[in-house]
Figure 1: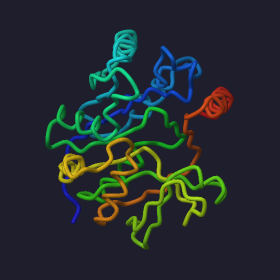
Figure 2: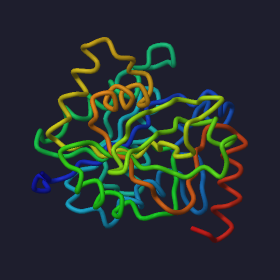
Figure 3: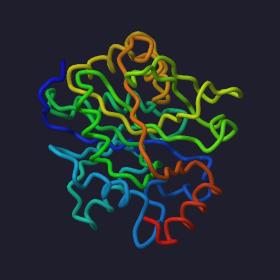
Length: 253
């Protein structure tokens, strides 16, 4: 049975050190790299327009990059809370799931969480994903992208869904992926199941990347996949950043 829809807090994950993008990200967080007339983060925050009922926006970052994000916030007068996780180096990072738990504790316990990786860009309406995800409450949902080929899918985590769109398997970067349905860093976690984040951490789960938590949730039969139409960009290397620069400035956004 679908629960009544409550308020939503958007959690923007930006605590990574983006070492694969050095020297571009030596002193600048990946989310604040230029894109068009603004930054990658400007586009991510803009994607939240139309999401209802959105009560709060929290960006989780590390201590090293907290001030650049606060400067961005002041310059944009952005309604985004900057949350510093206190880490200074890649070796001491908390990991995406511990950062997510940190953000969860800074929200109203009754809020659903809409989680976005700030190195993901897409050309579909985030509000459409949220509307679909809310129909699956109290279970979690994640956005999917159809890879153009099985070879392309080997670079990402993919899922297998049953006839109801419930995810039955999550496979991370396989040489022989069981599908071309790529899991994006766009998640909807209803309030009723957000306690499982802490449960995963306390149970010894690997907090470094969201995929480990999703795989754990999938084994419990609590995740739905929502295929979204249109382009998706994963900014993880100088080449992929250049590709999105070329495409985004090409007028397709």
